[in-house]
Image 1 (tube, rainbow, N blue to C red):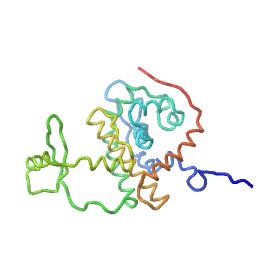
Image 2: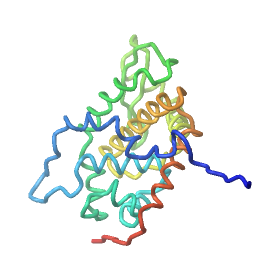
Image 3: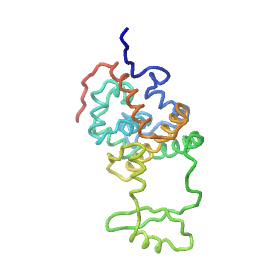
Length: 242
């Protein structure tokens, strides 16, 4: 009798985006609704905004345009990620760049406490201080463990030598998503926080399912498990433009 190959069988066959996202549900219930800054109603609430950024990191999108295209054309993303009535480019980037940062910060701290048991134990035990400095037209925030020096001296030292690539090296290693879609300082912070929340969800997933730390292998496996579910949704076209 010929053998058949079933690549997605067993315990992990139906592990979906919804299940990966599940640890956030109880925390989201306590997040107050976003309030519009003017008379224009909000077309993308906080949960949809957060889902879009998590989906961006999980799917390795390289631009906001590619993410927005998925939210407009991919049936899975339209149903699970985007607002029910769809999302326009202007509304999408307005939400990313100007709303949700405080809520995301609160959610990150709560999820971090939930994921503490699943995180690697090798981490710095020392206290650090945050120092801001200007390098040309750019403003940098630096973490330093020197409490005996004034901020000006620390800034001068870091202007000569620093290794900001360490963070983005970690980011690429665990998420392989390091393309910035935000265009404001506010939006950049929100995107980074969403990336950290995505990592915490991955840590919980890898710990619960495999008793392992986060790895690219498991991230890719999770993406591959979601793809067959995406194929269950027929492709649609509902491109919204201004």
